[in-house]
Structures are given as C-alpha cells and as structure tokens.
Length: 101
Image (cartoon, rainbow, N blue to C red):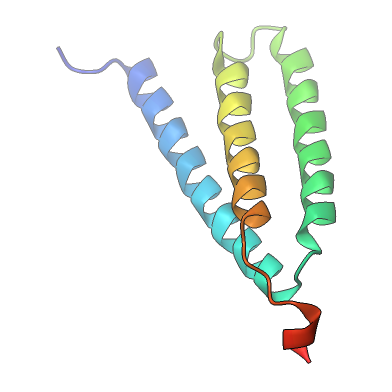
C-alpha cells in the first residue's frame, strides 16, 4: 500500500527538520570552537526564541490550521536537536587558557 499524502508530508517534514538540525549542530560546534565557552548564552537565547514561537504556533493551531500532533511532533524534534547540541558542546574538550597563550 503506497504512503498517503499525509504520510509523505510527515516524512518530508521530519527529513527537513533532521537536515536543519544537523546543520545547526555543525554551526554550533564551529561557533563554540571559535569562541570557547560563549555558545551557552547564545543557546539559551535560541531555546527561548524557539519555545516562544512554538507557543505562538500552538495557540494559533487551535483554530484548525495544522493537523493534530504536527506542532507537538515538530517541537519534540527541535527540542531533541537543542538538547543534543547542549550535550555535544558540554562534552567538548576545550583548550585551557594556559594552552591558548
């Protein structure tokens, strides 16, 4: 049985979020490497921005503009990416100030 249009749309959205998440992780690691210890503050601002936007989307989706579970699923995937970035950066080995010069 071929996938329905809804299933294909869900798969496309998941794939797109996965690709954006991987790009974000790469950029976050590059930023932290270039500016050791500074990404934590940036990540907090990004997380607050994302959470605010999902809250707004959730409120407006109550009007029936999005399919059931769409916002929750996207929010879950995005939060997984943000958490993965936080974990990766927390475990990065940073050069000590002595080694930096």
